Length: 597
Image (tube, rainbow, N blue to C red; front, side, top):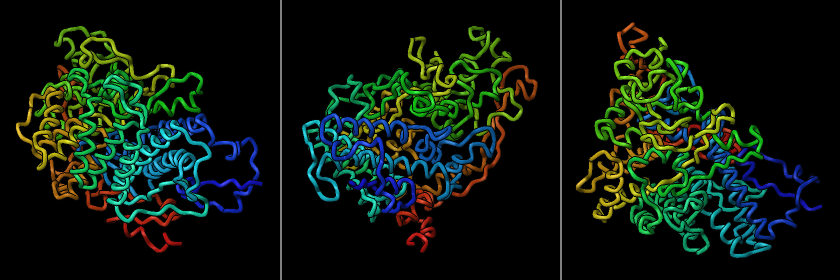
């Protein structure tokens, strides 16, 4: 009987060790590897599996949240965990308050999903190239299998970059591993990032990667392209503190002319179905509403079910359901009040600011509620009992600012659309509309421009300023820099990329490079963001005021002061022990002798 080998990367993902003897078991209904990996169709099936896995795992839902979005965004200084009260959504609010440990379920889920996605990429690479343990030639090779290999290479490089950003020293898994092998942990973050750059370069120069044909090519945004490889190489180089290399790849991406920012009045569409595949998207895995897939067997998870609830306001604390809300809202991440004030001062009434959050006045009166007075006068709206906050305990973690950048819109708010017709973000028939069919955005052109602008500081100031100005002009803020500076790039990126997985990794990177004081940002700025967490109330209901009037009171949360320990995540306990991984910085005390057993 032919032995069936189960790659150890699957063991790596589950954090347990299999016994070699258990692999010698006859299996029924399994296609032998002797008959597979031998055609374009087989390569295509593996590539489809890779993308499907990414959609359902890395881009998918764990319970009510997406692990990557929670960890990277909640750890930022400009977002607060919200929920209904101080102990709500505890499993992921701890990333906001730096109270997590290696046993955290969201942490483990995020790690396992990355590792599982690397495994699906390696299935393509190791079976259709010589990049396997024995260096064996593939059973079948064609121009299409070469394309599949290079797409998988870029996907694998991207996933390693993300793991290096989050865990500092993950293992570099550059082929399928066998049951008698363990992954080899990198010696440093720099080693991983340089490997990522080299892998992207190999794919770019292979001549096999698909390319976006033009800025109007929607289909290419859902797969690994030359443009995305350039983006990953440039971003990895910036995290490796190698701006010269970043300038090369990001400059090539920009000069290709195949990506461009959407107009100012369409900025909001970047985060909704209306903007899927637009000119600004570099990569976003494509959501497909396939009726042949059962709701619970796939469609729910691919649509990130319940993320729509998390990113909606706390609707059971409101006087009625706002028309834009797709389902009951649970008040996920709230925009930090002091940052919202700063954003408002900088951007004013810009399309960018309105797409990210509303002021109290806009939220009360410019948005449609479940009310008969949506078309009434302002004076009538001010006394409308069907709008505002009617809960006596208010809305937790909010000042008088209401984020909605990632809300799944049941109907597109007129304050954004100007009355034009756009597709809604959810399908009402999927779990009562508590889903978002928006593609999961990984990379957009605005981030590439801002990374390039930063890479040009002190080198190619004119090109960097042009890239920065392009983002500023599109924002509608009216603020245009006359010279290139790190401070302007840093601030513009916080406004432009708010709640898009960028802020926390950037702060860590800039802190490591001596450009920001991360202790001041987290522990002392604004008096300490965790020491005065706002709760917003409506005096119309709580104080019998004559009209709606939002006001805030403050409380403190349970939190740990930020320290260097929290720059990177600890490895999940089971994975660390099973694979002899070593943590870094303040987590090093977890590297005890038990990790070597």
